[in-house]
Length: 180
Image 1 (cartoon, rainbow, N blue to C red):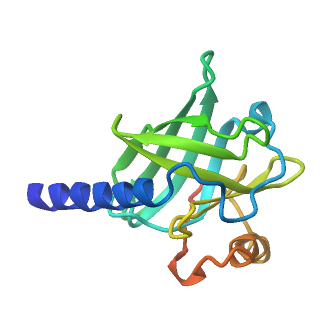
Image 2 (image 1 turned 180 degrees about the vertical axis):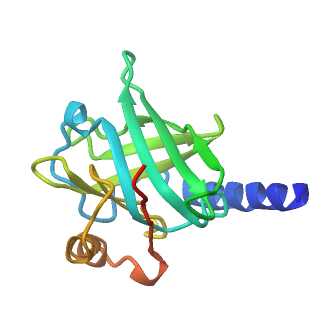
């Protein structure tokens, strides 16, 4: 069992290294949100769709919470239950910062204190109840809302934000949420 965890960590590290190498400091290769009000964006988001990595495969009840710190950094808490509604809770705490301070839509996230990867806010609704997050390689994406419930029609509408930017929607998996 221990070797599976090690293998998963190595695979995840490889994905992050590749992401960092391929998407260094160049300008975004896709349309991002025009402007993100950081104060309104902070708080808890329910993940309804995502492209799984070895570390968060089979996620249930996934949430992403952002907290703006005094130094301008963004403390992130990504929580989910592994494998089902009765699965063990897993938590990751990457730390981020705004890379493009004009739009606030391009961030960088640091994982495990070592790996840094771009984080694109592609869309945020005017009422800050829906958001779609992406990555320069278009291989990682998240569809999130402020509510644990999201109807199929609204989910499909948010997936269109990814489709408009040429993401492969077959890699995006729906996340189930229970009544917590």
